[in-house]
Image (cartoon, rainbow, N blue to C red):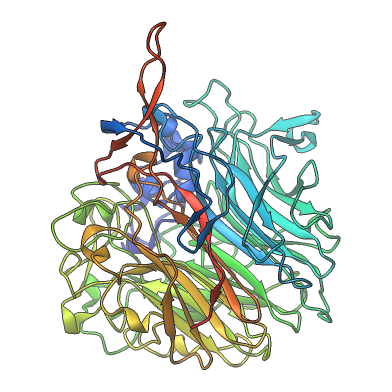
Length: 638
């Protein structure tokens, strides 16, 4: 069978069985928990879920070495050049076996108050309490200064968990933020319990929470959080696994669904399916509707992996993003892995069917406020990032990453391509979706980058030319609909010929984009970028911002003032899964994870006669181990 359609989603039941059977063979249902996952299922976990649920990450196996005196740097600077630190905590001095814990921040989201462009709210996964937590920050001066606001996510109502008074949560993340038209800010937060192996508590429950900052601009949040979805697994049976929720608010004045809050997510069921669901709130986040399926049946989906199809053949999905238009339309874009094998997705590819490894970006539309969705339509085909272990000396086995060129193997943090869409505020019929693809106009057979099937060990994408300078690279592409999402130009245009947002970057890697329109209808897209200096051969990276007024020609500007070294925290394997962007009339605010600042360690064990001392240290993939902080910059659109 073709198990190439599986990608870095999350746990799917009985995949180990599926690899040995045809597309029509019945699937075996097994509990969905970390201890029962196969090697392929481990690859499919989202980055946050893998980090928090994997017992092995309770302590980081690779400790830093070669300690150096600390000097005068307090690892708490508010600015780096023109970029501004958002999280206001200073670095905790964490034991080497737990580096990243109590320190890192990642996976960012940012939003601008539609009533006052000076007001910004940002969110991110924050590890200062040890496990990941949902944290926020707010700015009242267009991002020049920031204050932290602590989200009260320690416990929620225990009513869905046996009628007790409280359900406590050990971990959280996958955050997103938005504003309504009344000046309220909202935060979506995934929470879960670790369960056995990491702890002696079998509780493996999970939930999606919605927090509201009631007219105080993100400075504080309601308590307890309101449930979007709550799954009771107090017994640790492994009966469900929720993942990768994102939120939007219809903050268009005059929309028939003005101020409605939407959350979409993936539900990995015990039958092995992974459908996208949506739930909405019509009362400012107090209560949420019964979830409905977004990833309905479609002729685009023909590969079911022998799994059940209770809601149609589009049964393997991940990375959904909701967004709205001024006419009240709700759009959800996501990555789908149920597509058939073809020539590579366009009709004129020299890649053989045997070596094809493409998947597809889909979109569904709701015109009744999220109560129902039309059939999915094709945004575009795409190719995911390459299997990491194959090209980076066995590192981060079972995941995709962004390998640098040449002989070094410094860049091995897990990464994947996902969609980010927006509706033109001046034309509600114009819908755009950006996404990454490893095969594109700058990276294809003409310069030595061939799809080469999948890894027999993990199902990860293989290519020729991955480590060859000027051959393979990841681009951010754009697909456009001018009929309200009914059709996209990417559905009929070969991915090798589709418009690249990263036109000025040449044959270098770009990934983890986000898209937003200005109020005047100019499209802004931010992304990590390796077009500068030696980034492409060292695994360093920068952040860039591109923009276009005609969706054809894009200009870009460098946002970071100097390259960032490859991430080293969490053994260099986890850097987050996505980054955020917000736009106003004339500026854009990219929000990213920054690794410029050094990580600090205890390099002298205190005794009665020896005081403690802080030092920096080297890492396996960097001369100085580094921290993960959140930075932004208000950038004029190029």
